[in-house]
Length: 299
Image (cartoon, rainbow, N blue to C red; front, side):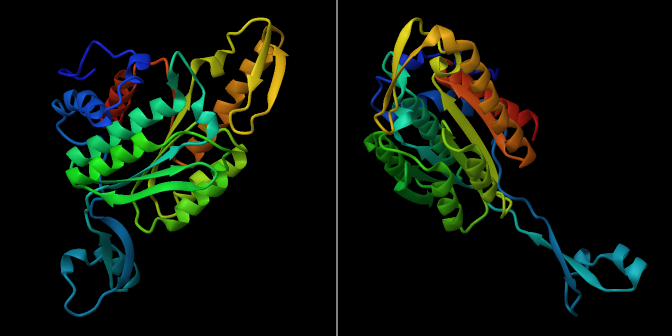
């Protein structure tokens, strides 16, 4: 773990009672930033894009002599210029994100994550935008990189409550269609929807070679089903209720959950999407710092 970052981690349930997201984001991120030598995220360097025919006056340093030697054809290599990063954070605010225990909902944890990553982007002079979605896009703030812009993002996060049904696949496709510039897409969601549709939508963001990171957020009870006896479950999106004996279905449930996560993990790996399973019992800044450290090591 990075030196200078806090070694005493906050209880996520206590974080849920912190109403000032700017204070929270600054507290969590600044200790990490103080030890950074470079950003864990990066813009796009001057990398090869395509060939075009050589024209008189073109800079000869881009002339491809190897192609010329093989084919006697004159081509120059074109490059994409280095840019600052443009990041868009997509936060799921559907009803299922309202699930949680001891006052900490999945949505609260997602808000902490969105706030801290937005703060980090602004501190690194990168642009960040926010899209809050449920069944449709509910709130949208275009990417900017000013301190005042960060205030707008955090105020928006503080004003939203999770509710209603979702259509993750459909709404992510619509968002992907609306993003015109290559950048970094961060999706924060429980991804509870038809998996093939969700994976197709996540892969849509890769069409223009944007980088995609998925934080798949769950309450630990959703992984382990720790309840005993007859339990009534409420669908937070539809309001439907169902009674089951938790101890009878526990083993099958856990197997199905592992299969659910495994399909996303494998699908994201195949699409070159960075998938992170996150549970809300893990101290928030520990999870984030470990993830960012890993990104730096493997850059």
